[in-house]
Length: 570
Image (cartoon, rainbow, N blue to C red; front, side, top):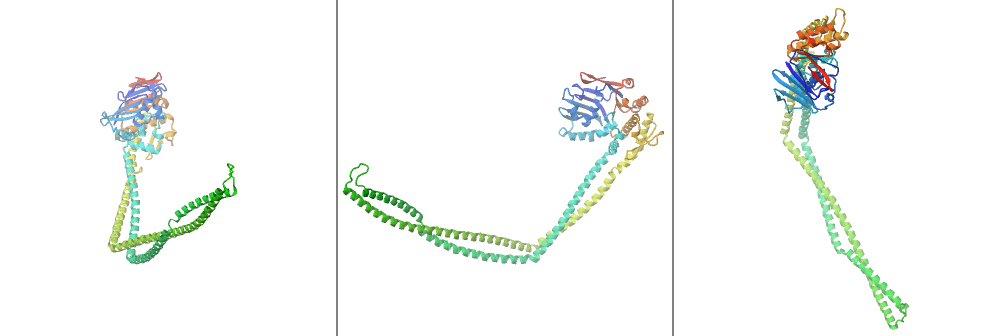
């Protein structure tokens, strides 16, 4: 049983920076009153936010923080379960989520999502939807049981009857079926792969036995041909190397022609300058008897001697120049021979290089063929090993077929268990067992509120209504006041079921504005009798606008707005 002790909150919605504390244990019946916006229903939002990180009303989480203080929004809830003291603390700005068990922090290292799962599944053993169906009856955003979808109705009932475990088990079995089917696919693929490997191995053995020797002979023939080509290339290289040697010797004889030719051309240039100078001197003394610069007469003997010397020197230079021209032509011819020999040597060297490339290629091909021969020979010598591989493949295939059969059989068993744990299996049988009690209790509470109809839920949680006045009626056909009576009857019934199963049994019952909307005066009196005398195992909090109900409750809690903040006045 969940025994709620108290709730404290501050900076939550319109609540200020001082804790508002409500004791859940002090009184059996409690009336909470106040004007609109005074903070009467804030406790509902604080309770569900603290426990489930979700306010009861449709309010965005950032909007829960008081807009004046804008920080340190905190909710603390104290309760006991199985003699263990729990404190849940949740806050915004800064974000806080702590769970204490007997004063010791719970799983401090875990993340908020993990701790929330622990709180709902292991401690409270109830989720938000089921909690609100059993503990809270609201007026605005609350969705009564009869307005839930079929799946959500089933979820609430399963929580109450402690049979959600079957859904969890079903989920686990579903996962196992998926795993086994994946394993079957993998084994099917493995089986096909092993069959292919066996076929390949058989073909390989046949090739070893039938074609091995033929391949060896073929490769030997290729090697022999390549060897012949190698010998031919090597002979060609020998001839080419001899030619290169001969051309190199010939080249040595004309080596230096270029240098010598360069020197001769320099000398030729110098001779040309001297010939030009002497020619100018001869012309000067031949044409002039008076110095053109100083206008003095040139001595005749001197002039004649200079003319004669110039003529002699000119003749010598012309003879030398002719001889030099001959020598230059000879050296030019030697240079042409040197270049021609160099070109021929380059050509021959390129031919040797090409042959060497062919030789390397042939040698590599020979090595590959020899390696292939070696492999074939080795395989021929190890046929027993290849047969052993074939047998290993055969054994693996047989083992895979057996594993595949086992996994398929497991799927059959899991499918059977899955069918039992589906909604229409064991869970439905359990629900049908409790349906008569549920329907009996609902009608009991309806009669207590002077509402005489026969209300029944079937196995699909659809209602059937038999009325003395109307033949064909449903929940949606009733007035708002009549719907409220049905909602209250279901709420009380769920609490009875929870008490019997100890699933979500709790000491807390909160009803928001049930008197303000739909219950008439007579219905109110009957309802007050129920909560006062019938619902004895719960501390009941009724939120209302009505101020004429003070004398009907053991405790009255009033909320007022003081300086813009919601303040509790007991």
